[in-house]
Length: 426
Image 1 (cartoon, rainbow, N blue to C red):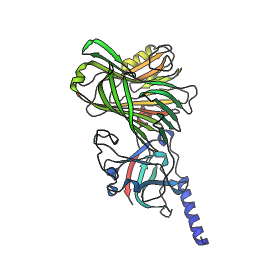
Image 2 (cartoon, rainbow, N blue to C red):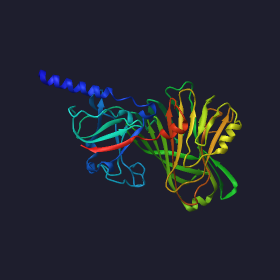
Image 3 (cartoon, rainbow, N blue to C red):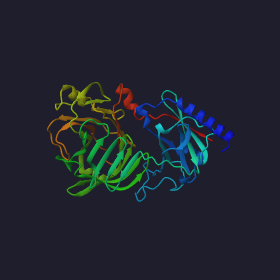
Image 4 (cartoon, helix red, strand yellow):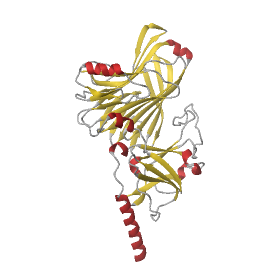
């Protein structure tokens, strides 16, 4: 490289670095949000081969590939899995209007200096704007040989083990509705979460024969997985067993993100099977392991938290009685030991049943299947009614942090509020 070219390259680098330095850092609550770009918003790339496309952004003043993935969906609106009974909405190797491009908010950078070299053709500029109006940019590239090797989510189907830089979760190989282990990197103490619990209470043919089915009778086995750097999705066959016979089969997908977990359950209740279940109710909860001093707030109870001390006091009883609104139902549990969880339930389709709060605070109560006795606390959701026939669908979302700050009425909904997005052709 002659001197003139070297000086020009150096000036370009200095300009890029100066631009990068002016970009303020993202807040912790925003950094690991997963940004989804709908392919239908980039119509000029529809029909292109997926393998031709990648993402890049300005990093420390130069253009670099960033982690991304392109997920394809089935006709029911869930992520497509080959061999599952719901067909793909588009074509397997081509970009279709139902496909989605995923990347992390933190990987968006300053606007590209057009003089910054990069392999491949820039075909779209993706603009994100945070709550302060700060713009950050990601670029869709065609025919670049460059790919990021970063994996924000790592998954072993053989071990049933999910790992991110923040948490690890090992599922029971015989039933992914049971947790064999959970750890959070910065948590102060032993294993913080004991188990995820499902309980179906129902009469069988008559309300007199009240029966409780739990994780031993509700079994989800993986049938496939899509392992991506941004999100790993497992498709599971979810069966409800009564006297050893499957009486209900549902589709479940578990999505793992760097700082979130989502359970997506969908299915059709056959009329004959539904008639077997009389006045069924379902509870879904997380049982923690001795989070003494932890506080629980809900969307309906924001002033005085439930405090974990082994006793459900009058305040906690009032919190339980306040319940939850299906349209606004966040729950925030803060351990005060570098682990907070904000949870939501979203109903799908026309499924819109009454909802209640499950909350237990007890030193000794043994409620298997679990590893550690006690419910300290055991917190979650109750679905109090089910339709007589037809579709059932809901998504349970868990957002994990070292600690959320401020008013929960503001930050809880904000945990899943995505930045404004604009896509421009280049």
